[in-house]
Length: 74
Image (cartoon, rainbow, N blue to C red; front, side, top):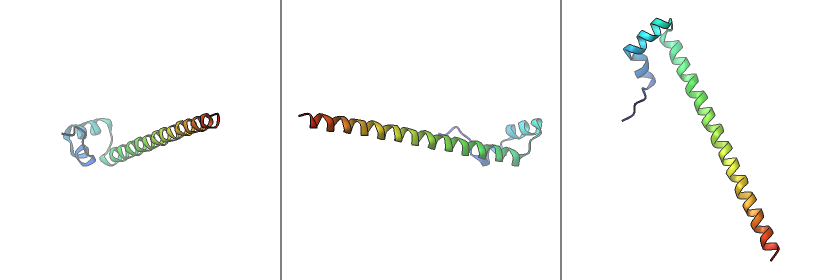
């Protein structure tokens, strides 16, 4: 069972509503904040994925070059 709230659930949650009122925020501002945070998190995950893929590519490339060098020395 997921424990994270959807955006709609967060915006309709009474405790979050009380927190927003206490902090002087409206639901639209909070929704924008959550949207920006989600987009930033997605961008970071994509950047991390690209970096891992590039690193894996260069590791495979180096291994291939090593194998080719060994084959030439035979």
